[in-house]
Amino acid sequence: MEFNFGKRNYQLMIVGVLFIILGYFLMSGGKSEDPAVFNPEIFSTTRITLSIISIIIGMAIEVVAILYKDKNA
Image (cartoon, rainbow, N blue to C red; front, side):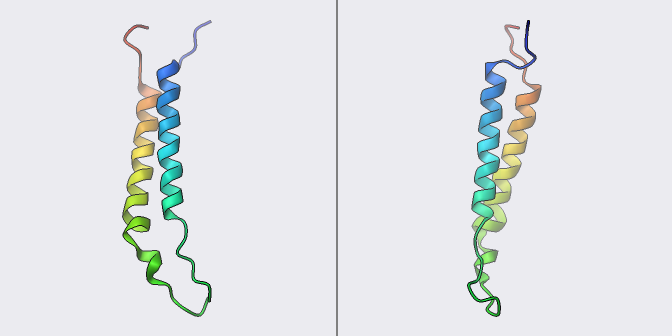
């Protein structure tokens, strides 16, 4: 019985999931202790730019992992 995905596909999928998890981790935080006080830390470059880029890269890696076909198969 032959599987559609090979070892390389699963490795790429794990890397993609790790990028997505990293992006959500970078996006977290910035909460103010007092709800009446505004915390400008929610607009940091890490939360707005780097986290989104990490998630998009992770999604792209997932697409590549699904479409990847071994040359030997």
